[in-house]
Length: 306
Image 1: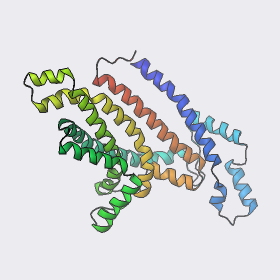
Image 2: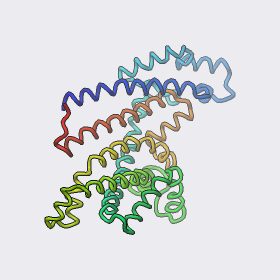
Image 3: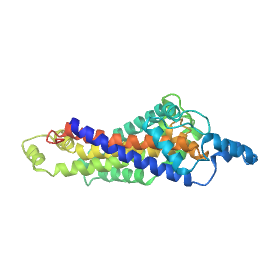
């Protein structure tokens, strides 16, 4: 197990290096000058040149890249061009809000998807199954950039039940969590249904039913437990994808997380901050995949990490 974890951690190094290189290259190809955005269109050329030299943006691109990699190795992601704040601190301050939203959205997805998928599989071909499948299809088809404003208009503006933006108590979390969790619930419900259906066709389930085991016990105790590996796989992959979806959701609801920070950094051409946010998302995705692989051994003792 230890060798497996070490090997996977070593494999993350070239992945993160590739992400860092790609982000560094693309962000410098985006049209716009961060110095001009900071000083305004009416700034004198001498002021622009002075600030560009102070920020190190007048150096050749390969020199900037070497400095970026050197700082990355030391755990230094640089300094924000806009606020002059260390990138590590700026991202760390926004991380709890994003983690809160991610956990809440995954909780919404699990509480909706698992029961829906199991019930649809147990009552295959009935109206319950068709209803669950239709709801899952709607969840996949509706993008969160449309669902979020719709929920805000209905429950915040018209009904006045929930706040429309910001981070505060539980009421502020409900709409963003549903917006981000609904598409994930749809994917997870479809996978749960397919996985449980496959297990229900196995001989051991039919044998259990022949011995007098109730339908509910056969579905939950036998079929569902043995169908968890593909479900956990989708769950792990979707948890990594939550952060990418949070970029849009946090912007819609003015949620003060890493996703909204990323959008603001792109608008101001804040290269170090954009790189820091994307590297965090990439690392989280890799970590989620590693934890998913480790969970396989707990769910199925036959799996060994040799």
